[in-house]
Image (cartoon, rainbow, N blue to C red; front, side, top):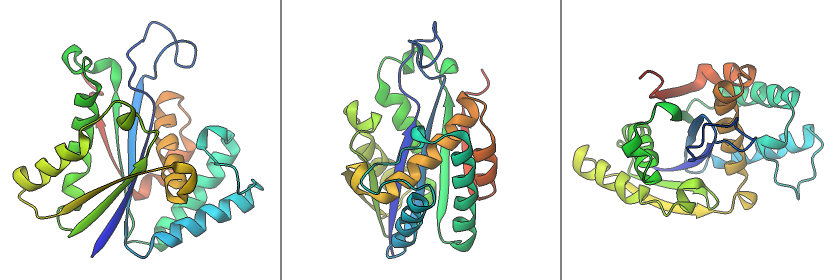
Length: 219
């Protein structure tokens, strides 16, 4: 059965820690989040996003990013998300978060190294039993901006290290045209915000359905 994997991240790949994040400094954490959905069921997720637009009274012509939500809205949306996931046990929600200040200097010289490493730790084991996986990510993603070789790295890891015949398709997409990318943007932000801003309520609400890895949290 084919699957679709929607992926987004929150945080950045900068290394300026002498100033606070959003005040000239870089984020202290980077989160990559993804949801894997059996082909044909992705419309359930799209309908959910449309319902959030209506509940929050947001114009459907506007891209509703998590950064534009206030804390109350994020907590409300996270409560709705956990209901959706409970009702759809075939949906697989995962994420990996790195504490960037603990990343070794030699991994900071090339942003691809860290991003590929995070992807390689978090995704292949989740998809190697599937025949086809279409990885749909935001064209504005940091991995795209950095000229990332991530897809080829994942394909090599899946085929040669894990000895799987899973076919991985790469489909960069404009997030404002793909409702399910908006959905995973919300989730990535909720997870990242738990660490970056200590806003833990949205994260705790989705945690029962989240398989979350942390990286370099201890030196």
